[in-house]
Image 1: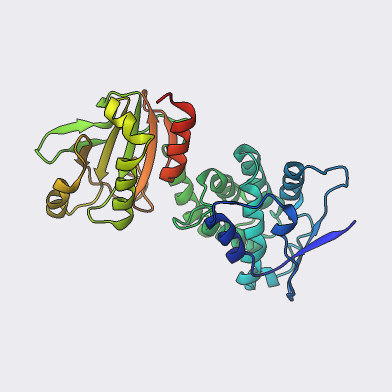
Image 2: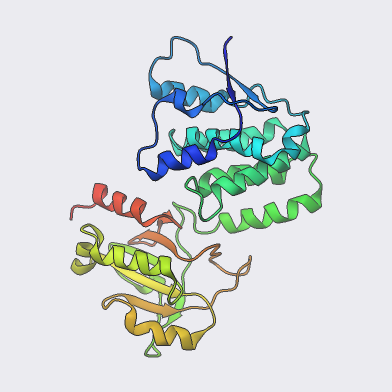
Length: 313
């Protein structure tokens, strides 16, 4: 059976494709042939699979079939491993999330006899699916990896401490769950709760005063032809929460927050004791009327697209 050879240098190419807003559907472009001392030979799909979507799914499922788990060079060569992992992340981003999630956990379990390699793949998974700046960021793909690592029979308990903490954090307020309530204080000294806000939808934003990305999202919302009309009509309400301790800075910035938004202060410590772990600011959640989570820590563009496609504005 024929093989494709995937090696280093792919990540920047894939980032460029994504940044142009046109992720490639040409399967061959995901596997540029390059010279490298360390390669992953990837089987080609059966000739009967001529549809691009079918080929992408097949590649995603069989991508790691020829990985030599015992080859310790993969453990040492971060660049090579990152290169091949980036192509797989791109493939998974083009198939249904539920199918992709089965594959991420399945890969880790396949290597149960190779704990060191499992931990290196955990590093890659965290970088691609958990890092705040990753274009592939997707907690639903990262969670099965964490579950498989914490259950791995040959990984020492000490190496499971951090994955267990990450899993505990990731399991909070997932899509489909009811969002944990938040008690907050307003700038005038009033008090309120997230569950006490009545609307068809609630857009929750964790922010910091003066944060450039927070300001960008704020302006995006104010000028959005989808989100702003929903805010004006009252069908969607906005709750902006400052989760840190510098109350004086928060109060000074309050005049710059949009009118009509509910703006509150609710200090939160990172870790298992708080209902919300916030790895990066800003963080956006979209909730239904009963506070069921629709989107967790998602890009504003994804939330906007869903509202456009699902809400009659």
